[in-house]
Length: 267
Image 1 (spheres, rainbow, N blue to C red):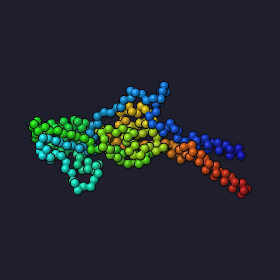
Image 2 (spheres, rainbow, N blue to C red):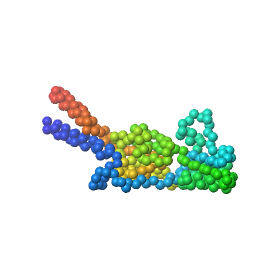
Image 3 (cartoon, rainbow, N blue to C red):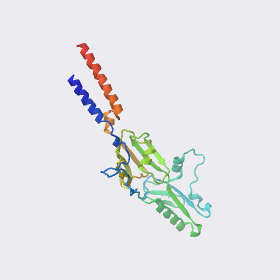
């Protein structure tokens, strides 16, 4: 009987200790022994201007006093094409090739790799004024990313790719659009796989810490991959909450009791 009691105590300790703590599921906590629980008023968000990478899709529009003179530069689109906004952007936009170039009617190939959209606007405008138009044409060029595409994998409700039509998207907005992190997801080690001219790099974010807002990776970039790894509780297969842990203990105890009774009767 003592052995059974000891086994029950050990099982209870193991299963309860494998529950997911409340603090591991709460976002934006004030950590590091802060004197109060308020978010600092001087919290600043870090965001550097995005520089165009390979495989980005750019939306380019050119306006002038005589709009017909720049009509060839503006994508018309196939009105018979049944496509949503993301697909339309793919067909009408200008894709940055492996050499960092885009091909624009009458202008040919332009290298845009590593430039911001504002810098690309100036490059195109100067090229048009140099080759085809005069100052009096009042050329006006706008360049925007054709949606912010990213992929989320791991412990999220709806893994997959998303396209958001916004210039600023932070990590919380990105995750909210794939259905939130599951209870078994590790919010302290969210990986951002980001593309750079030299290759890809992996960065980590602790979403439970309010200081994540000061991270240079707080805002996602086009072609980012967000990976939420599972907590060890998922691999162990024990209860995620106290209630589910109690249910697990009850099931194990029921099996043990049944086994002991059967063994006793047979002997």
